[in-house]
Length: 359
Image (cartoon, rainbow, N blue to C red; front, side):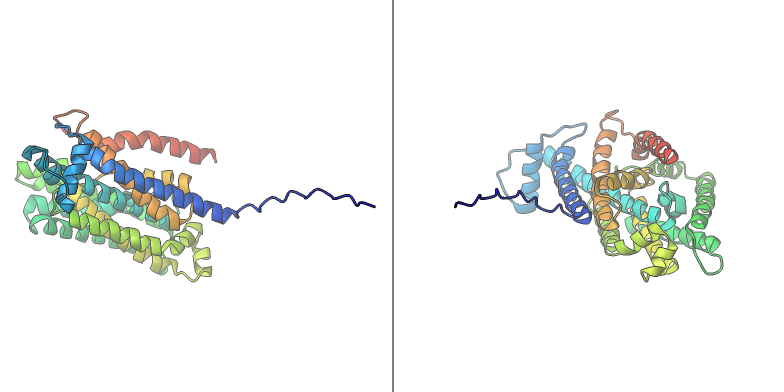
């Protein structure tokens, strides 16, 4: 007697765990951001008062980097691309990366989603130090400017820590209030230095510089910003576990073997280094360190192992395109980059505040 053969049951493959799905999604986002940044470089280099096709830009880059291809462009195009715009675009990418990573770190350190490097007085300290160099000639060249900006940033963060430290501990809320107070004081100091200076040209230079610009970019200033961006991104990526712990709370950090006070001090020094270098070469550019980390967390989640590299790439991409817009919107006049980022960042900040209030 024949036996009935039961049909095979359909067995569904088990779904990937949520952590793995987030990791895959984060890796895809980082890959796409990297591709978008690489593709944006030749396009944005070609944008300006004298437009140059991306194909010509790519051939000029290939010629300088690998001595490839026949020269079919003019000397003027070569100088515009290689001497002026390539350093500017790369500098914008480095500054955007450094500010965005610094913003993501500060938001974790103080557990405040509306925090950025300005909130801890770091940017104001760097601005005061650099303004003193420009107006009174302390230091020389870009290295002197960077050194004075870094000294001002370190002095600011040390002052904030000194005010906020109570009973040997550092709490995020106290850091916020101390940072606001120090930032206002240092901004007043910068204004006083401008007022006290006898140099009208110096005062005008400081005023334009405090609004943010990549107009002084060259191959000399680029290494400083590149080292700062690479250094802060690499260090914060390796310290992602500590950032995750602090973002949850000090008790969670203690339970994971991380000292909140020591880690905040270490991370704040890294933030000061990255912001000081960015301010020294590009002036004060706001909203990048505040808005970009929030955009990134919506893409890759809250884990800083993904947030930090994604913030670096997104910040670089945002500032590269913002600078392209700043130098063409009112061509031949250039809009200070800080004004443009504030114009774009303010509506985003309002939306962010409304969403946080609705939770």
